[in-house]
Amino acid sequence: DAMVIQNPRYQVTQFGKPVTLSCSQTLNHNVMYWYQQKSSQAPKLLFHYYDKDFNNEADTPDNFQSRRPNTSFCFLDIRSPGLGDAAMYLCATSRDQIGGAAEAFFGQGTRLTVV
Amino acid sequence: AQKITQTQPGMFVQEKEAVTLDCTYDTSDPSYGLFWYKQPSSGEMIFLIYQGSYDQQNATEGRYSLNFQKARKSANLVISASQLGDSAMYFCAMTGRTARQLTFGSGTQLTVLP
Image 1 (cartoon, rainbow over the protein chains, first blue to last red):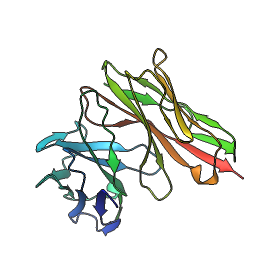
Image 2 (cartoon, helix red, strand yellow):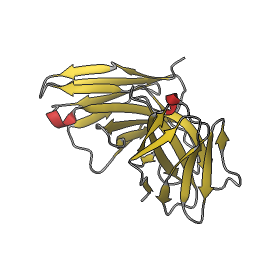
Image 3 (cartoon, rainbow over the protein chains, first blue to last red):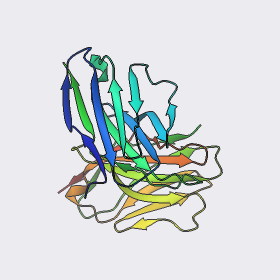
């Protein structure tokens, strides 16, 4: 059974039209992450939540926002998508542990196309 | 700050042979975790193996083993008896005591030849 579910798997949006990607988890993990992965590149962390504590990476554009209404759900909002935002967006969860030993579980990703 | 380096953009291996994918890291955290993930062309990130910085023995998971050399700051992935289904991108990643997120290397594209 899928433990981290991302919807939709594929999303096409118009240039400048707000879009929301969703992620849900059944693991009850307290940490949730959003990564952006462009073609043939490593995933790049956009932000993460530790419980309700939001942590933005310094170089994440303001165009990207996130919401975590409860433990199970996390959303990625792109306020005005540009052509450069076309990428795979990966959601991940982990149970934080001292020493950083917790494994991260990934969803299947949402592939975003901007037209 | 943490940094992961994978110096092999692409690797080829013959089916049924073993292959080693290189990974070196740098961190100031005394306690950290090292991970390997596989990403097929479908895009999902699949966890393969984990090594804790204080683990005395090298981690093994089936055909995967992690050659952990702490003094050299290396965490190479060894895949034994390669299969055609092993063809994918492989990422080395780490977390630290003070960093709750995974930092990824640039990845190695592995192709298994029949």
